[in-house]
Image (cartoon, rainbow, N blue to C red):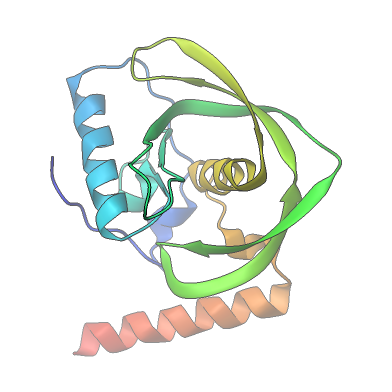
Length: 172
């Protein structure tokens, strides 16, 4: 396992559409291990492979509370099959947009088909935080960030702020 760097806004790679995983092999297992190590260290509850610069359709999620044992979940080639008309709003944050949080409205429930690390196809009907997290991470795989669900004004302010920070960091 290796700790990887999380790419942040305004890195253009965050806008890439990730490629489907053709097969589960040792390189995918290593990627997943690295993703969990990176996600736990950050700390975060979800991570898409593109966030560590790997444009593959792989997501790691762990919604366990701090006082609970870890509950790692892997979603390879996840696809939303159905989304409810009912909506929920959660405060979202993103490891690629550090220390910025905003209320985002999404479908309250989703049905997602994905491959597990065993290569078998699975489906999950998700509600609550899991539904939100899956939608957030699947968005990453499609080059979409949670700020894209905000007003154009808020989004442009955030992008401008992170672009300025990145330019200042280059100078330092």
